[in-house]
Image 1 (cartoon, helix red, strand yellow):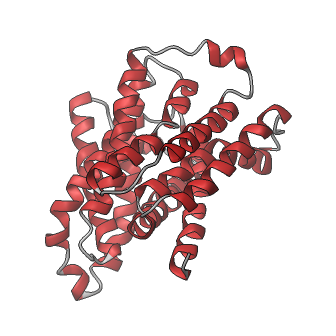
Image 2 (spheres, helix red, strand yellow):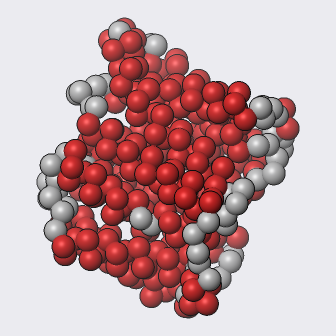
Length: 295
């Protein structure tokens, strides 16, 4: 493993921690404004922060028009994930979506084999399933009866389409990269995401309600805009180019564990001893997949 790959893993771990933090921030914003508007505000806010940076350099400005068409394709899958997530939660539970989301690394690995000619072995498939098991263990708090009550419904099918969109987002980031200026690609992706979320709002008929963001809600939204959107989109695109989508998405298995750890650090919520085996299994699977996957 060379220096660039090692650095990419550190950046990817940082991105995964930031995403885990977004679950806490989003929970504190839930019910203030509708989810479509919330996501649009994240994309628009992050785009506005990048405007003075991207437009400051002439060589970056000149890259926008050539980068935007590819970024629009990349961003439609990113936006589609959030749309599917919000729509699915009308008829399913967060436990179900959390469990189904663990399929993303395995699906991404299969899609990478098809579109990027990456290798996937039976051993890797086994490790992917093991990682999913560890993450599900944490999500269901080690309670077998909760897992046994799991059953697919309409909302779950919708979320599975969203999970597939997230896989396609990772694949297209690698597929459409053309030695772009990364900051320009990030900016165009966020602009594209904003466009698709505007369409979603128009079709759903839901109001913006941005005026309802007050007090601590502004701080939580600032975190979502800067940390969980602007920084993570940049880090995911940067690391996907180096490591490939399969290795990047393997870090998804760490998400439930990191959320539990952040809840303990920030809110003092104790980590149940029953989830510790799941955390260890998820971490082990993620490490193994980094060594066995090709970019």
